[in-house]
Length: 202
Image 1 (cartoon, rainbow, N blue to C red):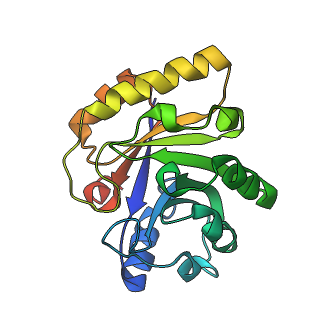
Image 2 (cartoon, rainbow, N blue to C red):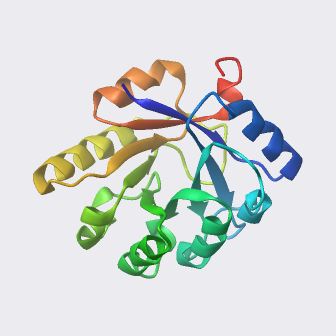
Image 3 (cartoon, rainbow, N blue to C red):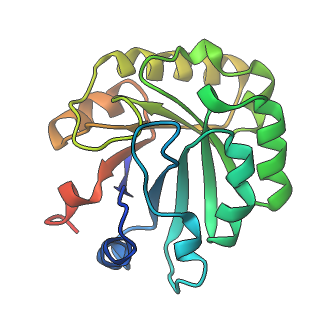
């Protein structure tokens, strides 16, 4: 069954703490969305807000930033379990993957709505723990699910089977309850849903 992971996108540290506490004890991991104001015209909290936060949750950091490699150490200090960077703003995907691996964290890459999965460097596929497929334009919440993401998920399933890779496939953006079966049906392992949509279920 597909794993549902709550996502938090906020510019308020107090809201961040409140939303993380809602997820505490109810799910295994939470995705923290980080936007630097350059990748998209939006800005969120900094990972350092969670440096000393006591929790049993695993944190995924979804880096919607320019040069994610520069944010890796910061995310590790902020208890990052998986660090997921957008390939659109990476100078070198292999360098990014090696950097994350050197810290002991798990590594992922993300592709924005308009990016083809073929843009992922084939040489890093065997090292990836997760590939995140955006089904909305990255950087903002509250958008409608775009079904073009379904074909990307299917393509990543084919690539995984052909190459014998072990990465998980995660869909992020605009997913509502009615789309979960469709996303799972094409092969996604995980689905990101904004925590505000999940509050009643948690």
